[in-house]
Length: 194
Image (cartoon, rainbow, N blue to C red):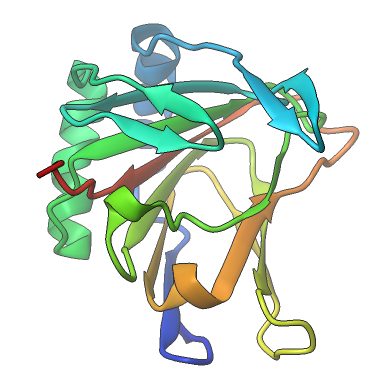
């Protein structure tokens, strides 16, 4: 389902993109195959642990939030999913950043995927596996219209395109009381350094 936003931004949301059995299998495989880490970040001048686990794959290094993710090969399950997401979004993604939310206490603050190595107006695709979590999408300009909350369910796909990263931020707020985990895979195309 295409959700048009303002300023040329858009979202494509497909709640049942992966059949439940395939989503279950991928969740188990990715949980085991990926090298999960909890890294320190600097927030408001203080060093804290990220409130989630991360893993990644791609043949180009990626920098975000003061972190450097060195090239790392795709695991078999991530490689299979990469091919499917590339075909659906018609984008030659070459990197995946996976976030593992162990419970509703894990979260991600509002941000935009707008690092220079992503180029101008990048397309970002998110595959969600595990318990449903809320993704909040907020305009960067105060008072601008088009705030959205989407529940990303097991096996869903969300593609953020057009000028979405330029004009909107997104995040996964805490949802206390949720005890089940979620893995989200965010696919992006990194430009190779000159």
